[in-house]
Amino acid sequence: MSGTTTAAAALRRRTAGAGANRWVVLVVLCVSLLLVAVDATVLHVAVPAVTEDLRPGAIELLWIVDVYPLVCASLLILFGTLGDRVGRRRILLLGYALFGVASALAALADNAQVLIAARALLGVGGAMIMPATLSILRQVFPDRRERALAIGVWSAVAAVGAAVGPLLGGFLLEHFWWGSVFLVNIPLMLVSLPVGRLLLPESKGDGRGPWDVVGALMAAAGLFGVVLGVKRLGGGEPVSSLFTLLPLVLGAALLAGFVRRQRRRTYPLVDLRMFGRPAFSTSVGCIVLAMLALVGLELIAAQYLQLVLGLSPLQTGLRLLPLTFAAMAAGLAGARLLRRFGPRLMVSAGFCLTAFAVALLTAMGRDDNSALLLTGFVLLGFGLETTLFGAYESMLSEAPQEQSGGAAAIGETSYQLGAGIGIALLGSVMNAAYAPGLTGGVPGVPASASSAAGHSLGEAYEIAGQLGGPAGVALRRAAGDAFVHGLHVTLVVSAGLLLLGAVMALRLPRAMQCEGEGEDEGAVAVPGPRDAVESRVSV
Image 1 (cartoon, rainbow, N blue to C red):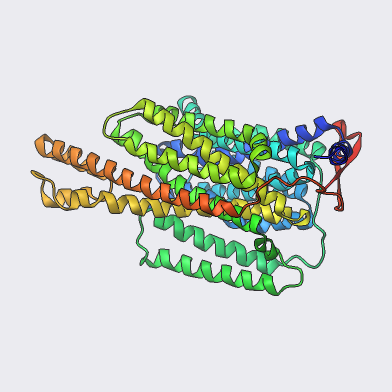
Image 2: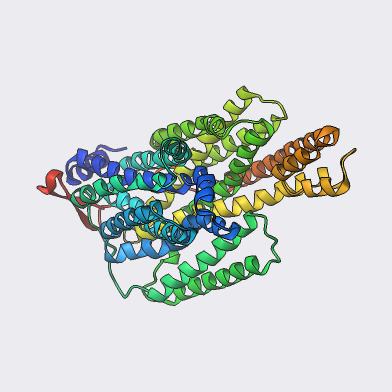
């Protein structure tokens, strides 16, 4: 790199204000992300306590768990693009306030309906916070090298939040009632609101043309239908079910109408021309494929650890921690890897490493092999985070500055859709490989019992316990063998999807382009410490 380019990059960093202030902003944004990530998983361990206290029906319990990610995924594009219009900091601070109020409502809920409503409000708050954190990060770090490091920290925090949720929930439940898993959000939000108001910069898009309210509602309703249908498929509902098929069809129709509407508008809500850029569209595809291949697999792995190996929920969480630590390490090292190898090689290699880890885990059997699991989970976490980091950074850097909120929302929506489709797809593969090992009959076990055991491993163990004696032992053994076989088939399918992702990533740019970035774009005011100094961030 020439001396002129280096000097220009240094000048951009100086004109961004006090360097420390940018990193303080990053800390505030990461705290926001941590809260949302933790809240997505913290309820899982509290479900038994909630069930005992509120006595929800089966459908109500399903909505208590699913309504938060469902609402959050549906509204990401709406609030991401609204932030581009009215101000990203404004949307983020409103998200803080709503998240705090909803947390209090959830903690004090005395019936299932109130808890469902509170979880839905938490989803609205999460949808306001998630894209705003990434789009503000895009504004505050105009230099791509610094931004890559910031995104690495951001993604590492996301990995921590996903792992901390169940552990924090378990700790709180040992000492307090189930509402404490929500109440812990309130003091953090009370701190985040004034700190965010003082330190976070306000920024908007170019503001040309009216905000497309109809388009925003079409996107929200369409995503709601698609995500709901995918979640029902992931829960084992048949495709032919009216309550599965109808949301999928209506959601897909609304999204198709949304795309058509955006193409015809002079000032679209989301500039679909971004998808004409190979780096952007490929990055979004890589995010979907990475999550599609791995989220369902993670769920199946948790079942393997608990039901096949007989580990407790706490022991299962501890076994999965190396995956989280490896993901954190990859996020923190991501900026350096991206500068050295470039997006194409980094994302493709991340996919290949993850596929290797998945293939390695096909050696899992009925007996506990802790060394194999440790190695596989470490490689899995590092490879996955390397892939997601490179894809997110390329996507965000490729998007126009004025569309950063919409681009961040597209990335988060892709993540959520990939996760939902992955659970449905890999869950279906698992069931298709597991069931024949039992429905064909187990020697010494009544045909009706073995057929019923083919629904799931948990149900098989329950039936085996009811049978008792040699028949129960035989059924339990056959169910475990069938599950391990199904796990191996699922791992092979997952590895194939990951290798497909490695090929897809070859469309990404070979090198990380940093020269000339931000020279002709707008400027965003960044409040200095104590709000006493204003600096300008060239973006």
